[in-house]
Length: 113
Image (tube, rainbow, N blue to C red; front, side):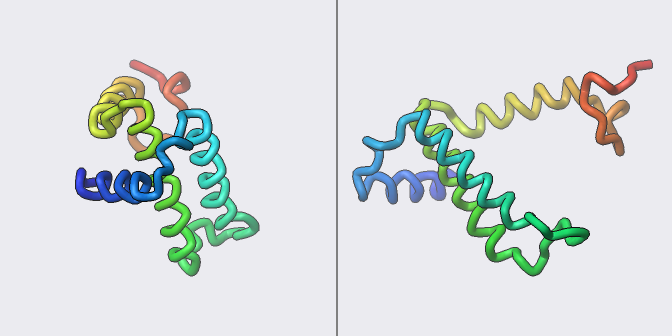
């Protein structure tokens, strides 16, 4: 995501004076609610786990989740690039390629050696 896109999200919020309502607790709740709406797209989809015919709805709900995540990062004073890069580094340590490639096992179930 570019800084320009992040700025547009923040500008939208600021133009409406909504920052006063965007505390971490309420933003976390909003992220969870929007994530549930994204999950709802897949409800009762049976073997169609991709739901390709529902891409427009997926796009809309995913955008809501991302928007709230940007607002949450802003409310907490977090740099999105920094926290994502730190998480990628941590995941690389927990899931080394030679152990995790092609496996869906959790990191504590991967066998070393």
